[in-house]
Image (cartoon, rainbow over all chains, first blue to last red; front, side, top):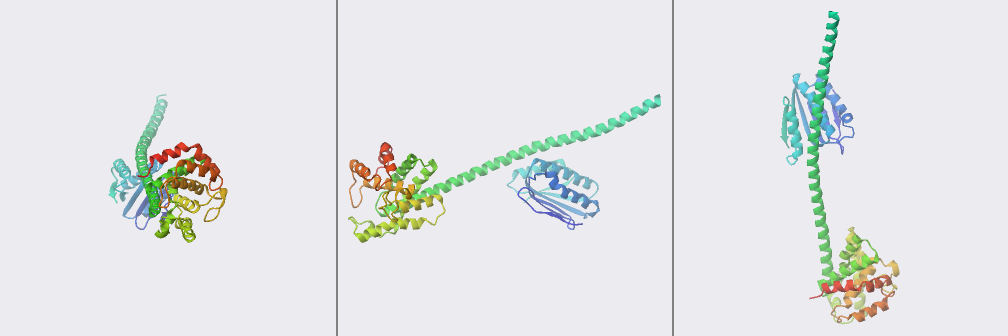
Length: 126
Length: 263
């Protein structure tokens, strides 16, 4: 399966999806003009990955400093999908990486952790 | 009949089940949407606060830079003056006079304020003039006069490389404050409006203050003598419009002079 790499822009995070390492990584800010269109390739890739291409252990690194409300909605959908996969027996670890000076990033991570109790959701200070 | 009724009920129950599922999903979605909105609002508020904090920081830094620049410029002017044994108050007065001229001439407030800060540097070139010439307690001979007159060019050369607006302005002031309206000044014998307004203003402000102060080579002139000279030099040494501004707003200039007397 091909990797998917999207470079960071002023308004969108860098996305690094590596099937061979079992790594899903988002780093940066998320203010896309059309959020669902922007993340569609990532969501498609993830579905394909978990459709038999996944490694025994998948790591998801989330390092989003700032994001808008439609990104927040998308992250919910994303975590729904991940939860579905975890429920189906896939081993997935999620790291919510935040800077210790960024309270709002930490709080956002805490909120997601609370909403997805069944996920292996780790708050990781940088 | 009974069988038919049962079938209908079955269909309705089916519908009811689908309806419940759909509405439950809708309720879940709406709840989630509300949650997202509340959290986003909260986050945005925090981010807004953070931005405001950073803006305030930048503003404070900018003020700090401006203050520093002001002080450096003022101190440089004072250094130039102190070498020729003039008091710090001379540069302060020239600064205030220049601002008054600038405002009445019609320059924007910010530009007038800048000129107030830049005009004290008009004599900065004097730091490069030898003491023996600079502080000679008698009239200059021709050779000494030539050396003394280079201070305009020297000041300009010191400041001209800067890209800072205030220092650029100061370089113009230093360069042109000895030009005369009639073209008989130095270093470039510019005349009329070819002399930058900054130069014309500082020239008059400087002379007004110098004539009214004791110097190593002369006593202070009384006001009548100064006013007479200004009337004679209107359109000769000085920009006629500025001389008019001077007499029309004399009380303003005299107030500044009184409040910044030499000790």
